[in-house]
Amino acid sequence: MRHVAIIGSGPAGFYSAEALQKLYGEGVAIDLIDRLPVPYGLIRSGVAPDHQSIKAVSKRYDKTALSANTRFVGNVTLGQDVSVEELKGLYDAIILATGAPHDRPIGIPGSDLPGVIGSAAFVGWYNGHPDFAGLDPPLGVAGAAVVGNGNVALDVARILSKTRAEFAGSDIAGYALDALEASAIRRVHVLGRRGPHQIQMTPKELGELGHLQGAAPRVDLADFPAAEEDATLDPGLRKSVAHLRDFADLPQDKAKTIDFDFFAAPVRIEGEGRVERVIVERTRLDDQQRAVGTGETYAVDCGLVVTCIGYQTPPIAGIPYDDARGRFANDGGRIGDGLWAVGWARRGPSGTIGTNRPDGFEVADKIAAACPPGSDGGKAGGAGLDSLLESRGVSPVAFDDWRRIEAAETARAREGSPREKFASIAEMIAALGR
Ligand code: NAP
Image (cartoon, rainbow, N blue to C red):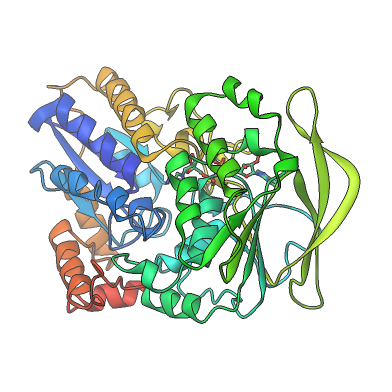
């Protein structure tokens, strides 16, 4: 028997477990350890609440979690309840699937003003993540700036712009739905430091903005290259750019607008005690397609700034870390003897949910090469972890427990919504009657 601990129960963690099950059959015991009492990581608290079809992938993960050789060990925090060194003594392999839950700082003057929020916090807030439920973003303001031209910027701009009715069927946190409905925001500026041909927004998600009930996207065609140049783009990007061009023909007759400001790099955030405006420098592209400032600036009036410029993995003491890339230092997933990284903790915050599958399978193959199926490493595995946690008074949450939390969340859902998430760990544990 081989024992593997996977830290983090998001997509990367689950795909790694699935791969190990396929490679080892019954010859492996897997513990999926998570600091929250609930599984699925970004599927639960990162994927937009109005994109329920994407969240349905968790059903596939359930099959993995319900296998006899795999346990969900929730409510256990690495570095607090158990150390990496202790896990090394108990398991043949440890896989860090901890994702990239911290915002990359924008690092411009004024970015510490109240009202400047990173997307990890803002997305966590509307998704009911216990770390961010108390965020209280300033929504009683007329303007918001969303920095970045990736899919997270799109999610944030859309969530800020939808009507209450458009959230029907979503699992947006009830407090966020109420706050967004009462929001005074009428103008959302999406600030891209490069041009329409450099966006990282996928067509389906971008196209949605053209069909909102109460908001219309707005572009300035002067920012676009000649239409013939679109033919040089790969098909996905070409479709996205086509959506952007179509936005130019939309009537501007909605209560809210979503302005795409291209070639617009934020250089400073200003305000008396809170955000009042972002100073943006107009840019142009150099011959490497990098944004370079032109020296010309303008102000975007806003009381909320959400930076959607990428994420980083928090370091763990004693584990090699790549500061420049904001992830664990690793060679094809291998950090060191018996220690591995997968998903965003391995490669940084890029790709879709499915990208994590080959990633997990590749690392599982490497683990199988180091610890061949059919062999025994003489480790104590989960039984050893259980006694260690018990001696420390830590009560893990098992998968069946999570199912009870899930049932309670379903039972208290508003009409039409799949669930009303508990937004604090205390409430989750209370739902178990503990
Ligand atoms: P992303 O796709 O890497 O986009 C980051 C954006 O931030 C880029 O436009 C980048 O511009 C800009 N940026 C970076 N530093 C900046 C700075 N200092 N000032 C101004 N702009 C800056 O990251 P993301 O949007 O956070 O998404 C993360 C991953 O999750 C992506 O792979 C994304 O596709 C995925 N995701 C997918 C979905 C979906 O499929 N529905 C939804 C959400 C997220 P440059 O290009 O100039 O660097």
